[in-house]
Amino acid sequence: MKKYIPIWSALFIGAILLVIISELISPELKAPMMKEGGWIETASWISYFVAAFFVLLKTLRFPNRWSMVICTMLLGMRELDFDKRFSTMGIFKSRFYSSADVPIGEKLIALVITAAIVVTIFFLIKNHLKPFISRLRQWEGPSLSFFLSGAVLVFAKSIDGFSRKLEPLGIEPSDATNRIVESVEECFELTGALLIVVAAVGALRQRSK
Image 1: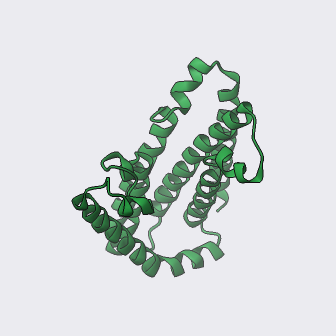
Image 2: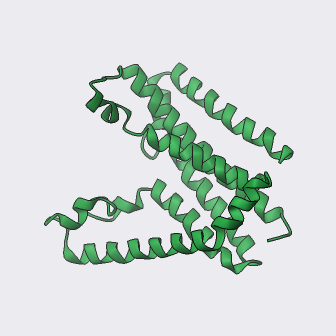
């Protein structure tokens, strides 16, 4: 585990520095970084596909890891907004299936895709949850990297729509606060993706299953 600590530290420090830099530079320079489809988001989805490639290499030796490959690719596809890019609205929204604006054929395709994702996640949990927990208890580097990635991504998701989530409480953050929160979200999403790359590369270098 010790050899991973400098890598983890560098990624978290890098994320914090990136947030600080984004707040110090001009809006004209910040826009290409933080906007939808900007270079930070681009780096995030590229990182997921790079991680999927390394997991695929591991899968050539241990075929039961196929669900890991697909789930990692799904994270990249989610970052590219594939869940709503090719449909009337996001396929994971309940109103997608109740809205009369969505064609029935589109709903059926979305149902098949959703079912395939659920099956993949089922096999991921069935085949890998217990070994993952066991490796966490052993403080294994790749597993800890994946765990940290999950924690970072959950944090980033929790601050998505920061203003909207505080609205029921009667709290209205300032524009400056919203900008900082948006920067933190984007930078930490990239950190989460890079942590998955670290986990995938570390797992590939291990000889054992």
